[in-house]
Image (cartoon, rainbow, N blue to C red):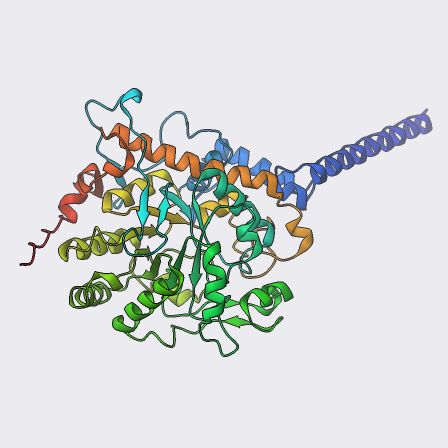
Length: 495
């Protein structure tokens, strides 16, 4: 009898093992063949644990998990917000906000006693960049756009998905300093070509700007952007490790393959404001396209010198747009000393830049694009209140692509296929699916920004002003942004 029981138990164990193996094999095939979840596609079966922990964390965080607003650089709440917008699931939550409304630095919008009815809403107007100053001005329709991420720093499938999604959403994509690739053009979207300190993609054999390359590229892009610095590493050029410099990337950049791609700290021929303005005017005349400048802000000297030079020389040589990157920005790898401690955050830099333009009568001449951790509609709406015309975000769109903040962007081992050139890991990023999420994120960001504007009693998002948002100072006090950063007086017309 004991022997029979042992045989039955052994048989049951074998059956259970076979069932378990069958379930695992079923999950494996299902995960590998599905196209919606990158982690499951790249890490079948095991990847299910991440989704289990992520889902249960919502309910058990009070016992085992960290607060969903503590993680850095982006907390779980912000990432979940982006994921929902990208999946077109809406921004609805229940049982109250986990946002600590009394925490210093928090932003609170001023609701109107009589909000704007849906039938009273107006479409958010587009803005034209470079109108009256170049041969081919650029009409920009979307408030939210894709910030510079180089092909090389991110993968070909990621660029392809961003390009297609940008086309569907009607927003622009910035190439980043790595040059214009075929993947940027694949979706037929508006492209802004960034010229970094190494002049990748538009350089000659000596590393100088190539007139032939600029003329060749100009018809395929809507504008050019001279990058002085970015928020992650002001004063430090970009670095792409040799393992990520493939033959194709090297050909696009005009550099040797399989060696570190290191950009100079600054443009060798731009050492002061006058040289910068000379280059802007030259590039605009050569290409016929709007020309802008991207920079982080460390103090007020840059804007003071820029505005003074424009008043002295005339506004024809002014940049058509300024991209202001906060010190908290940065998708690329950078020294921690610079990433943690260099340049002003966007919350301080942006209002000061706008003030400098107003004070000198240059605000209508130069469009302003805000960048730096503005991944949610609330942060984007704050930037519009401060005075920005457009919002650029890189990491917001990376989350839309499926980024899980693994912090491996510079190692070529990104598990979601976004920042790696490993073909096996790239396989998980299905372009057709992720491009839809990119478009959803851009559309829903614009939609929610308008929703905040309507709640403030405004017909559309371009009507925001500083008095529509308050900044929390303590548990018992907030202050209007218009008090914290009062609008300066516009200059009197010169006679």
